Amino acid sequence: MRPFEYVRASSPAEASTLVGRSPAATYIAGGTNLVDLMKNGVTEPELLVDVRAATSADVVRRPDGGLLIGAAVSNAELAAHPDVRRDHPVLAQAVLAGASGQIRNVATVGGNLLQRTRCGYFQDVTKPCNKRRPGSGCPAVEGAHRDLGIIGTSDHCVATHPSDMGVALVALDAVVHVRSATGEARALTLDELYRLPGDEPHLDHTLEPGDLITAVELPAPRPARMRYRKVRDRASYAFALISVAGVLETDGDTVTDVRLAFGGIAPRPWRARRAEARLRGGPATRAAFEVAVRAEFSDARPLPHNAFKSDLTVSTATTLLSDLAHPVQEQS
Image (cartoon, rainbow, N blue to C red):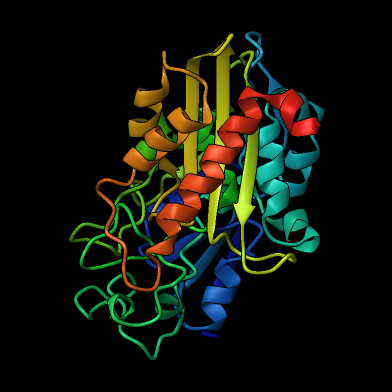
């Protein structure tokens, strides 16, 4: 690991100013991903700006019932918060499905959203990787890609986003609050925060230098049933082979609203808007769920060793939605 400087910022303004004026500076909070990347030589910042004291570590209930989650809230605190468990259980389930208890104790909300892909070629500096070194190639396309993406990818990159939390947040219509180096505040949906790789796979998100995530906002809860399911290769902690976050509202046997998101299949938490559009106003039946979810993959670009992910996601999402639509049957 190369030598670096370390500064603990005391305010968002100080943090974003320090990072905004130096391309070799970066934020650090829990460090559960960044420190590994530094040890492996994937990234070599010259200045680390610690933002744990510069951003909020509180979850605040807003007058409309929504929640404002500080960027420095730990994953463990988020999953245990009573308002999150009661009103947004899909988020608590997703957070608890990620990492180990030790990692959740130090990982933060802001850092979780900006963690880098776990693609083995990105992590291995002896291998080419367009995301790490633009123009060097993507050996994953013809190499080890079983764990990698099938939708939203490009010829230049098939890496996936690793966050469980992000999958639940995109299904909950969360927005991310950002402060720029000039002090401007703005809010982004997760679709606006993350980029698809296209011809620039080295750019994961739309944040500018010095932009600092200060909080994540959840809208007021609605009378919906929700759940998160994750399929992985082993029972102990592992990144998702695929995952599904579902939020379903019904009136009798009719779907009145649905929000559906997938993890482990795309370069960002994937909101299944095509499937949602097919489901709204339609029957809340297993057959209808399967047809709609399968339609989401009409533009998929699976590779030989990960083509199974389409069927696995369809079956997992179909079962999850069926369980939400008919909770009594699930308990019998």
